Length: 74
Image (cartoon, rainbow, N blue to C red; front, side, top):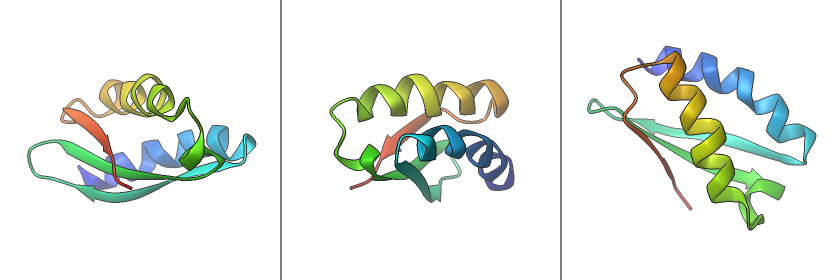
């Protein structure tokens, strides 16, 4: 599952990088929790929760059904 998550994140990252941010994969647990760290402009953006849930999490759940949730690590 981790390889699938990495592949999807590689497709999402250019959108984040276009706004001066990025996303770093921290962990993928066996029970479907993906932990990421938003960096750059995304790390301090007041809309980062929306980016995390409506962008990254939604895309991951569509592409990798085993993903249950995405959590931000600070």
